[in-house]
Length: 120
Length: 76
Image 1 (cartoon, rainbow over the protein chains, first blue to last red):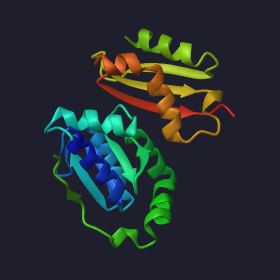
Image 2: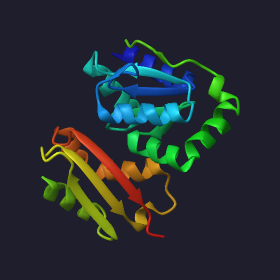
Image 3: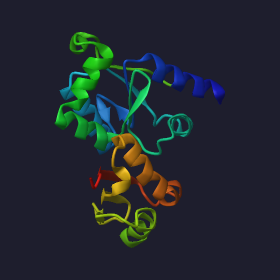
Image 4: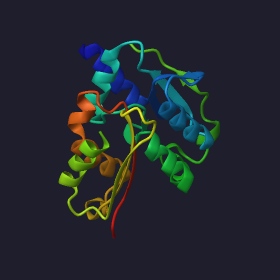
């Protein structure tokens, strides 16, 4: 399944804000995925979501790549920011917006629509 | 089940200034871990949570933990 691994690595490396979640932004299937999504939305992040539920392999490969055992997982420009607790904590303290500005530029809020990328 | 998780965390963080494991739903698989330790000083939140995941690797891998919420802070 190295194709799947490559696809996951590609998304992490190329998307500004990648959210690996259970379900989709329109219909999250897990409270923590919803919490992470809402924190990102509040910060105005241009979220690219990946639903890990269609195939258990997605989650396995993702955790192998990131070394992070739980879902959701949020990456900004290739770097693991954390799961729901961390993203929520960073959003509350204002650090999430700071980080997004630093990494994506001060105009990041208008930069992109929320979208879903199908995997595999 | 909270006792098992607590004892794993106590082994990994013998110096913990605060350590609690709560069963959030009463179902024995959704947990809230709160942990304050000197080991977290100077670490990013990602690295702090990684240490907690390392300590709980077995119950995470065998499916005991369905959902884990983590709140960590340093002791400094």
